[in-house]
Image (cartoon, rainbow, N blue to C red; front, side):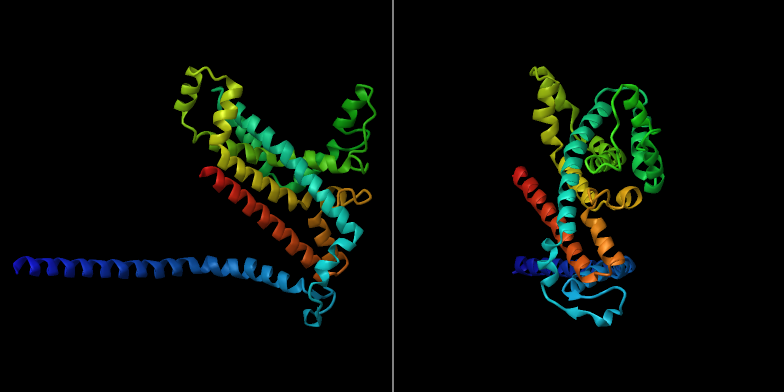
Length: 314
């Protein structure tokens, strides 16, 4: 009988502890919500509400030169006409080439530089990292001023070096065949340092004992990179790949400041076409449909990369 009473008393005390713990958790949850509410309000006002409005406007015909109350419902018409405009089709093609070229150049080059900065224990590595990262934090307008002179025909450094070797320099930003390539080079130079820092941070998470074991087994640098570094760095590489995709597909400042989508539409991208359709032509509905399509493309790529990464980790 005594044992039964003792067990009941223990169960009662445990129940009171669980109830007290739950009440504390509820109190902490309410306190957390209170502290997070200003940030959530700001995110809602400046991010979620504009996104919802953009989605709603994409189903309407509306000129930005008229009040928003004059919007006219057109359903999916704006989406159906996206591929009927030659300028938008060209912008999508240019964007695809720009994104693919940026990824194919930036990710392997960033990995190579990160490994060169991390594995050889040399003096001055921190200084080199700071210099590389500075290209990312410097305002784009300042970088554009420098690169507009680098690409300048006749007196620019690139043209001068080619002329000195007897090669006729192309019109870097004025030739439709070279303008898009010139923007890719600009993008790689500007963003490379940011990705290198991310990859170096990922390399620091790989245990050094694994490399020692690989050396003992006779694995060379190439074998270590392919069988050890890249698999262990998979999460960081996927993140860098995703960030390269997002930053490249959303490119706007260099186009607006260097080429304005020209020459002959060779550097017109989706992001620039959205801005031009909305603010130059007043086609808010069509530009919103294009913006929603761009957003969905980013979401799809992000989901696919997440699924691939999750499948590899199983």
